[in-house]
Length: 398
Ligand code: URA
Ligand code: ZN
Image (cartoon, rainbow, N blue to C red; front, side, top):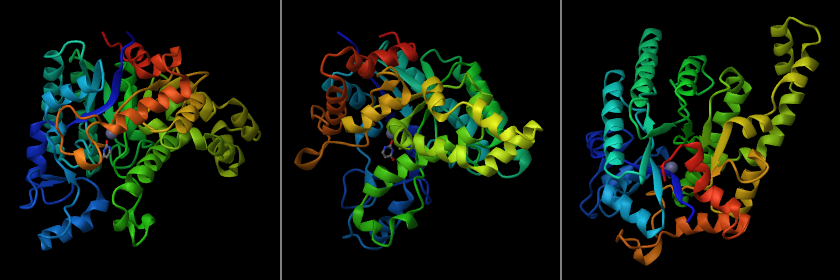
């Protein structure tokens, strides 16, 4: 039987939840008298409802229920068994270590990565993990940033000593200035040298103002369905425009949510690059040639080429329409797509949403159905997407 591998599946170790429980700013965990489970509040869009719930005990609860699925290894294993998942590549969920102080980030990353390694050791062949890096949002002065960069390079070296680590999970803020920040280059270079692919995952979305004054009425829909994918799209477009993929051609990235909107928008990005006089003039100047414009446009790798050479996409898009676009954007067939569930963020809906172990999660089935509709049940392509690609690319012993 072909393996089913889930490469997009998260956990928060108990140490992380303890940290969140002591915080008053995002991200945080709060208990409310009307709820048996604590509430996990991660997103800026959840702040208005948090404030209302703190002021009025009868107001709807903010954020999401912090069920055992976020923290418990037995719950992860039951979820895997229920859905026929052979192997999971588990990662710390957002917002990772972004909010920590420069002093705490390194030691916390080390402990969390070691705790993921210990989980994997206890379940050979079933679990691998993407490590977390001590990238923080506010590294402060230039020398503090240099220190942070050093701490990150040390963390990468540490990850190479953990036998079940198969890459790293990364948000889009980098060292506070995004992933096109030149300070990120040594980090990407070090990850490429260590053959650790980057699983790029969004967290910050779009500014809540984009969603208008009634945003709160629409719950999580706009930030998760639109904000997250746009964040990923912008982050990768910036890396592409800054030449990061050319500078680090050994870098391999797996993009969450099938690359945000990149498969749909890559053509438009390409057209804008070719038509952008400013980009062309800068390239011409850098090349020291009057005819630099034509030369650069002829020689550079297109976004399509980068997508087919350095990028993999997860298959967490919930529809065969998006999945076919993702397959077309990244290769001739399905060879660069990898199945994922985003467990535990999209639990069973409706009546049965109480977290019992044997429930089916519809969100998982939607992604399986998308693979079957796009590539055919039992087809070679479906097998590639559901597990063989991940097993090969991430060297999983399944
Ligand atoms: N999926 C995630 O991974 N994180 C969220 O915050 C929401 C959905
Ligand atoms: Zn996720």
